[in-house]
Amino acid sequence: MNQHIRITETGQPSVMRLEAAPAIGRPGPGQVHLRHEAIGVNFVDTLFRSGAFKVPLPLAMGVEAAGVVVAVGEGVTTVRPGDRAAYFFSFGAYATERLIDARQLVKLPDEVASDTAAAAFTKGLTAWMMLFGAHRLQPGETVLVHAAAGGVGSMVARWAKALGATVIATAGSADKLALVRSWGVDHVLDAGEPRLAEQVRTLTNGRGVDVVYELVGQATFAQSVLALRDGGHLIHVGNASGNPVVDQAALAARGIRYVQPSTGQYVGERQELERASEALFAAMKDGVFGEILPTRYRLQDAVQAHEDIAARRLSGAAILLP
Figure 1 (cartoon, rainbow, N blue to C red):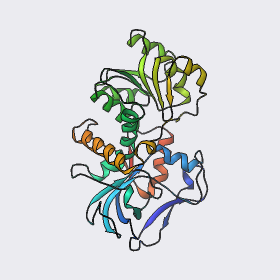
Figure 2 (figure 1 turned 60 degrees about the horizontal axis):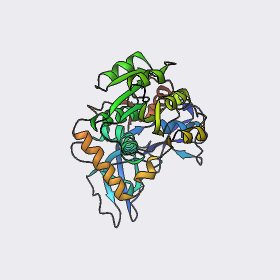
Figure 3 (figure 1 turned 135 degrees about the vertical axis):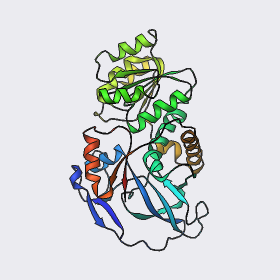
């Protein structure tokens, strides 16, 4: 029986309901019938659920999954039945199976397991956007990566190191600090340290970093600005702690290039999606991210997954298993 998770109102995780879903019919032109093997759980899911991001209701939850192609509609040539494929942003992912536009699917190579893809595809494409799109990271640059123990932050920190950058990473607890240190990044700092920017300046001989990857928001934003060199890049993609006040005039006066990019801006075209996916899968194959071991929940335990994200109990990625 096909099942999915929907919300009819926004609020706490308990507003999510596991329901019977309509049976999947024959795919129409350009569509694919995909049976999910693993479903990604992303921080953005909690924002849609809570109402922080406005969406039409009722809403079929989830935006990312990987699975096996059951059938394809007329005109579909990119995948065929039996192929494994993943997608990174299409509402309705918290489900056992679904119909989806073939243009949103990327065929998975044999060496990338479905649970790995569900855990890392959206996060990895976001990391690619930050490292290759919003600013093309150069070997020898020094970067500050916040929330480095998180799903996106961990991939940014490790990929940046592999690309030849000097990486200063932050995390918010002793366990997370130890985890990030184990990856071999250059410096690891406590995100809650009130003198964080001063510490970063000391590590860079007073110069400041070339790039800040701001994944936390209000709690770290002021320190991020102070830690950044004049003419540096401030790439702001997360507000887990709330929205900061951004003084655009002050940033401009220092020549700081401030952007709030979205992944879709850089992989919205099919050619770019394929290029980013190939780079991500190659990095996975090369072991850049180590072994990706997501926290696993059953589909019916999605409420618990969202509660754990809200309580910051997770390091790395989480997936739902249908």
